[in-house]
Length: 113
Length: 114
Image (cartoon, rainbow over all chains, first blue to last red; front, side):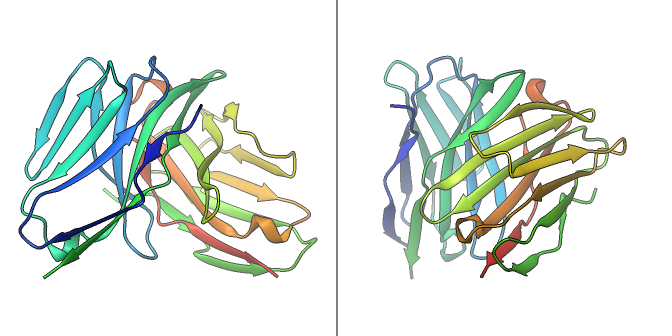
């Protein structure tokens, strides 16, 4: 298929780690992204990883990439209530003369105190 | 540096009308992409502009069109509106388009078609 797949919901307690998973389809994708969307807002770029890397860490965020399985994950350490949002995984694909981001349906993260 | 701005933030139209949405990219960015977000279909790519040229277009009917001006600002137009066009329309900018790794999104325009 051509879809980027994500689980729809994740619920964690404040202070725990959250892991959001994603599978993508295009093995030629060069970059993979994680975006965050809060209610009524646009998309906030959290982090991205180049396809020749297998891990990237940025403060509380860790991205793991398994290129063989086309699997991407986002780990949020010490999850806070302010992390409650929808998280989108996206792959960058070549489309005609340019590129486009192909998004998953989003994972709703709910953090309880 | 100011972020991506989109106007208007909210719009209500009726079926059959047309609408124009505007996007101003981050200063210095030359590429603008548009996406449609709906609960059913999620985020779908509409088109990408770079230096006033449309580089690619997603799988949307011809009623959806756009353009980019010499100052990199972009507009998208939807003619003969249908109820299914109700959505959040998001604009993203990047400095070089295909060769740039980071796309930054605006807050979106919420279009409601009655």
